[in-house]
Amino acid sequence: MNSGSITSIKDLVVRVAFDEDIPRIGEVIIVQNDNQTKLLVDHLEVGGIAMCLNVRTDRSVRKGMSVARTGKGIEIPTGEKTIGRILDALGAPLDGLAPITGDDVEYKDILKLPPASTSFNISKPEILETGIKVIDFFTPFVKGRKIGIIGGAGVGKTVLTMELINNVAKSGSGLSFFAGIGERIREGHELWDTLKENDLLKNTCMFFAQMNENPVQRSLIATTSVALAEEFRDKEGKNILFFADNMYRFIQARNELATILDQTPNEGGYEPTIFSDIKVLQDRLSSNENGSITSVQTIYVPADDLSDPAVQMIQHELDATLVLSRKVAEQGIRPAVDLSRTTSSLLTPEVVGDRHYVLSVQVQSLLQKYESLKGIIAIIGENELSPADRADYAKAKKLIKNFTQNMNVMTKHTGVEGEFYTREETLRSIEEIIA
Image (tube, rainbow, N blue to C red; front, side, top):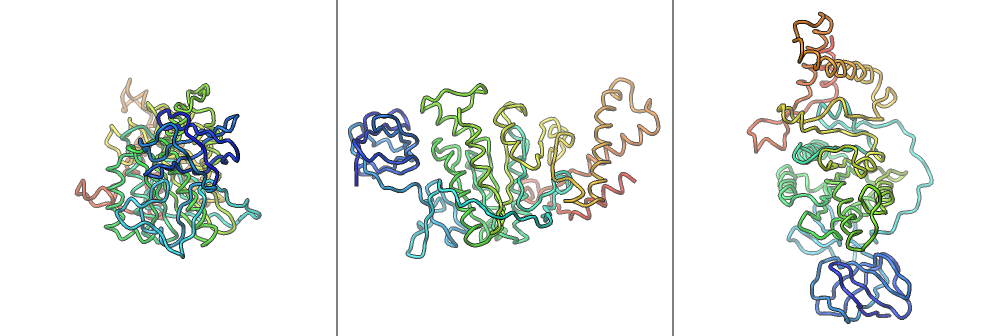
């Protein structure tokens, strides 16, 4: 096996010189030290230089140490044994249980893309009920599509994701995946406890690289979880529900890596490869003739600025976006959804039916009128409005209240029982208000 030598180290970036037979990008190479430290080849430079990333932040790596090629990329275990487990970016367990090994365990290179799909499934869109009124009405959860939950810090993105996992996974339709990308460790523990209490781990695969991990692992965790989801979709024909919390943290981690690799940022201040980073990952979260991947992605909005370039780029890849607002949260409305900024390309008669579509148009019209009347009422008062305007304003207020809901996953914190509404119940409640 050909070996190279470490010529310099800068934080997580390790420069390795090879005389001949240099490794490929994405290959894992092993430092010949006591820890057998794994380095991931990020890119190659002229003169047989491999720029590598220290995946585990192993500080025992020293200049002059020899390095051996493996000829392999990052390979993670696949198959039934991964269900109910919590794994890190390299496929190692985080749940205190034994590593996934054995003669019957197959492995997959996380960077290896599956073969391109040759056929398109044009069957009738299948709506999955979430039991959350505001989602089922404004951003219908359609099998094989992508939904984004967008908002700043502390507006309830993770709670909404946990409620979705709780409600949709209970139906037992398919396999649930959760990728914790750069979020709080506490939230990971809470999700694990919630799934364990509700006996949902038997249908769930979990991946975590939380805030305490280095940017290499935080950026890789998204790719690792998607690679296993692809494997279940293509080899087992499973329908996957894929939850990612938080997709912005993936960009943040890639950005940190670009900084330590001395790459020149783009105009928005992000890594130069931001477009391809998002595009490659999102394209892998797709459906084919074997099965489907339906994804829910939370997106943190820095400084509550929805025009942030990274947020905009992720949004372009989604079929629906649910916008959570601090202003709405301050009014005590939960979930704190900004109804006027929430959009979905799936809210069409072909997908949701004529009844739902017509109601959505009427509701949006009332909500827009409500926003325009708010300013007038602040000046002249509600009593000065025309009877028609006053009636519409009252209806809009009722609608906003109607979309508030207690969450099942918050019951143990608040003591208030959670609520679940069928799509039929949601539509009926809206019809009663509008009528």
